[in-house]
Length: 449
View (spheres, rainbow, N blue to C red):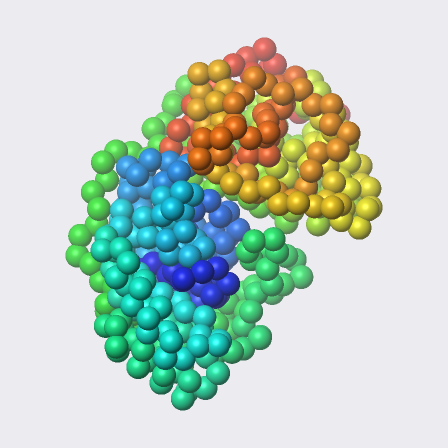
């Protein structure tokens, strides 16, 4: 069994690009490759799935317990030849100091670390940088380095000398190559119909073995024993599983989901995926889940699909149980106003509109207390509510440092919506509470004639 964690001193070092190329290069060798992502990112995991053919899994010790993270890592790693974990931000950057950081995940799961160094304007000065990251915290093992944006072979020799000085193995480099870059949006890579991800990833997989020693990478990151699985990740509820039909939006506009969330929903009922962009009406449904995504980029197509808007409006306004988060909240409102000031009508279920004009980032972990329930998740959006007449539930929402924030859980009839992307891969009492308490009085299927 081989496993390693790709991290870096900071963001924008190229760790995602390198990770995608390695995932595909390993897959092309005939290996079964399992990708993981440190932290709450739900975009990189989609690219990981594309590159490896296996579902990208989040490892996050704020949104879930350490035991849960250990269990899902063991569960998915045990079915693969190589496990590749991509870090988040810099190696030691966490919600509070190094809490929840890539280094914390590496220590928890005993994963050897490979550092990706942006060497664009650096040569032998890499030595003290590498020395610091190797020796700063004794709970992790930095075993190798890969350099990015290297100009020439002679440039790489300086960097290789730096590695030898501090006792970290140099595994190679990636040269500067604009054709190997993937466009980014907001804080990281994005999902776009205009970008040929498959072609870029395959090209990366072809180029990486030319300058990076993959055989040596696999050799120094071997291990003998998998972590012990202490308990099942998901316990099935046979009563709920027999009762509910669950519809999940999934297309270019709605992509922000956690794999473990979908696994939980699959254990609680019969899951059907549908497209608010392309399908004509909502499937037969007891519970509608509208995850986040980029509805603002597809606002014209969403607005033009009148039959789907009417289908969802009829379902929600007749009391159908719905949970919408971030992009889903935007879609259920009256309008989406793009950054260019264009106004597109949406489902009109929620008494609000959202605007991308004068956008400002809202970002961070969230703890949500509602009645006797506690949920954890992550908030990440540039849109803002305008003409907001929404009714909020009595909730307390706090950030990672325990300070209250303005984020709310809104409700209209049996439609619940929030800007928070909740993680219920471990604690799914919130979903069970919705299913058990808000579907009994409304035995609703599809109201479209």
